[in-house]
Image (cartoon, rainbow, N blue to C red):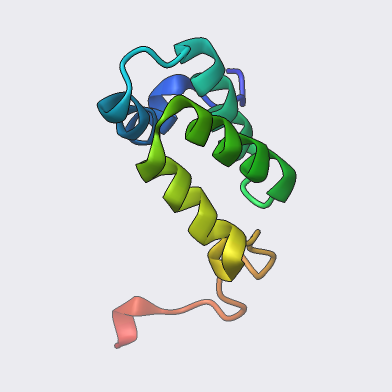
Length: 92
């Protein structure tokens, strides 16, 4: 199966934009959202996308991205996936 982000995985973000402007180019919108989903720490994409949204009159999603650009952005988790010690839940 393809590991690329599907439009359905960013449906909420797409709906936020479309709620403000139904005439926005959907293909471009999906392209931006997929790029962010595949690399959430990419500030350049986030900035370009925010500017594009403002040009389209989609301020709510643009404000979400603006907050991310001011230090509240998602960071890539690099910690352990599982605890270092195994737990024996039967002996709790």
